[in-house]
Length: 386
Image 1 (cartoon, one colour):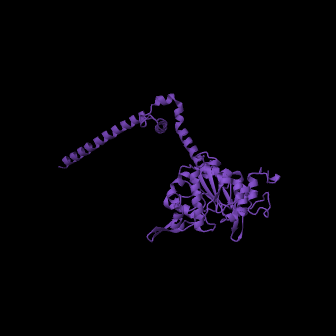
Image 2 (cartoon, helix red, strand yellow):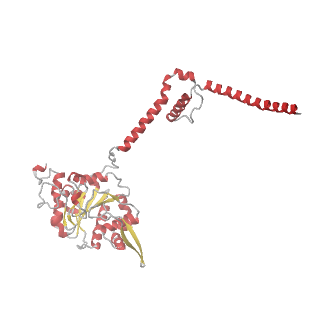
Image 3 (tube, one colour):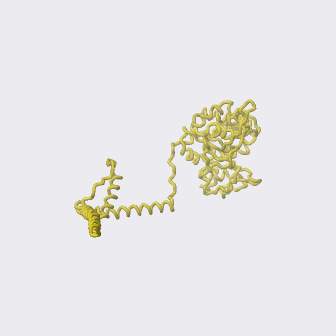
C-alpha cells in the first residue's frame, strides 16, 4: 500500500516539473532571439529620438516609423551614432538660452505703427474763454500753436478781432456762456464735436488753454492706433471710476460708474468712435446727455464712450494736467510728453522744473523754455538754445 502511494507521488512531481522545464527552455530561446535582433538598447533609443526628430521636420509623414533598426545601415552611416548626444546637447543649450532670456529680458521692440498719419490728420480743439485770451492764449499762440495753426481750432465765448487776425476762421465763437459751469462747458464741447465731424479729419483731440501740445509726440502716439476703430485715449484725474446717477425719465434713476479722461490733460478720440457717439453728442444731443448725469463736459464724454458704448479708456501717462505734481516730470523726458500744463497744486506753483532759456520770473509756465528746447530754431529763442 505504501509503495503504491510513493510511486504515485513521485509520478505527480515529475509530471508537474516537466512542463516548467519546457517553458523555461522556450523563454530562453526567445530571449536569445531578441538579443540577436536588437544588439544594443541604446541604439534603439537613439533611433527612436531620430525618428521623432525626423517626424517634426517632415510634413508629409503621418506617423513615426516604428520598424526595427538595421545594424548594417547604421554601420554604413556613422554620423547617426552621434544623434543621441547631439539631440540632448541641443536640448540643453535651448533650455539654458530660455533661462537666460527669462532672467535677463531684452528691451521690448517699438510697436510698429498701425498707420502713417501727419499733423493734418488731427483736429486739435482748444477750449478757452475771452477773459483768458491774453493771459493764457497769447502764450499758446507764440509757442506750439504757431507751428500748428492749420490743425488747431480755438473755441471761445466772445468775439476777438485780434485773435481772428492771427488764426482766421480757426477762431470759433461758440456763443456759449462765459461761466465755468457744467452747462457752459458742455455747450462748448458740443460745438467742438460738431466742428470736428465737419472737418473729416481722422482724430479729435481736446485740450485746455493751459496745455502745451507736443505735436511730434502726439502724431507718433496716434500712429499706433487705427483711426477707424474705437480709440479713446487720455489720462484720468481720479484713482477710481466716477460715480453718477443716470436719469431715465419718469423720475426713474440708476447709478452708473465709468472712467473718463480729464480735459485738463487733454484726450483724443478716433473718428471711428466719434461717429458712433453721434446719437448722444451731435447737434444739441450732447447737452441733453450731460444733463442726464449732471456732470461736466469731459465726464460726459467718458459716460458716452464707456457707459453707453462700452469702449474702455486707454490710459496714457504722456498727458499732464495741473491737477498732478508736474515737478515730477524730468527734463530728460520732456520730449516724450504729449501735453504739459501749469497752475497751482496744493497751494503751490505747479510747473515743470527745468533750467531753460528763460528764468522762472519771465517764464513761470516754462512753456517758452520747453518750446525752445523742442524747437531751438524759433526766432525769439536765445541763440544759446540752439
